[in-house]
Amino acid sequence: MLASWFTYEAAPVFSLVESFTLKYFLKLCGFEAGEGVFTPGGSMANMYAPAMARHRLFPENKKHGMYSCQKLKMFTSEDSHYSVTKSANWLGLGEENVLRVRTDATSRIDTTELEVAIVRSIAEGDKPLIVSVTAGTTVFGAFDDLNRVADICQQHQIWLHVDAAWGCAALFSERHRPLLAGLERADSVSLCPQKMLGAPLQCAMFLMKHTGLLAGCNAACAEYLFQIDKYYDTAYDTGDMSVQCSRKIDAFKLWFMLKARGSAWFRSYVDNAMDCATYFHAVIIQNDHFKPVRSEYQFTNICFWFIPKRLQLSAPDEETEEWWSEVYKVTLALKEKMVKKGTLMVSYSSYPQNKLGYFFRLVVKCVPEPTIDRMDFIIKEMIALGSDM
Image (cartoon, rainbow, N blue to C red):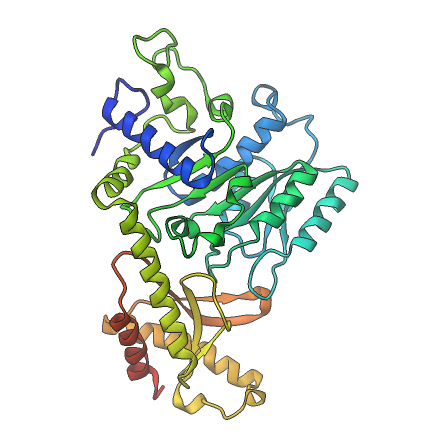
């Protein structure tokens, strides 16, 4: 497990494992003829996308730099992962050139606003580089409308990247795969099996439908490693396709899960996680101690406020600014009580876009396997600790 791969010679078995695993997930995403690379995490996978998009548009920049390049614009939603903005800084594009499009009431990118922003950018003389959308947003688990965004990107010839670091688990479920409808129309996707699917850290991938771009963009052709006249097929020397050279054998962990458990295991565990999240949401809706942030959720992210007895009201019109301030304080105080007792660790977040203060964010994962009993325990324990706060 401590091996490092960069050439077939350095790790022959693991090189073959990587090739098999990448092909498996490329096919799962509808990118059968594409290529990919394992990355240290979802953030790095997302950062590959604008680099590939830029190299496809301006391959000469690899040699000459961006000094005479047209200003490039990136488009994403206000609910997208922060790594999208980080990538603009990392690639020298500048954070102010990331246009964050507002989302609708379900936290999905507003496709009308997206197209308006693209058309405006072109009219101003800028070059749209990439649209980065999300399949499973970090806070609310929302899935952007991939088909509609693909239509827009196709019309304006813009690279479409899908951040599916969280939502990629739905690919294994016949019931929930429609959440990712249109994924096969994207240019690239980020997958992070270390998240919902429970693969051991670190385990993430950047996949795309195009071939040759990874090596074209990243290769430095070190003569002491990547000779072209070797005694074996040098297509297995994948080190120059990555921005790294030495890499951990992350593919082996995912390959082993696939071989030991099979796709049926993934399907059943994804469906179970979704069922448990649906059950939790249905129960708290009926309980006066809980106030869901949204009336419905697409994935396993269930967001809610906890309402102790003293703050329970008879009608929504009694919710004053002072009342909300107290509710937000309860979130922080109850979080502290749960952690110090050692029974629960439920994350919390705010949502500045809609001026929402701190709320709890229960994220149901496949591993460890969630159960209805555990969902009930969370509800009962929060009431026991917070009812009299």
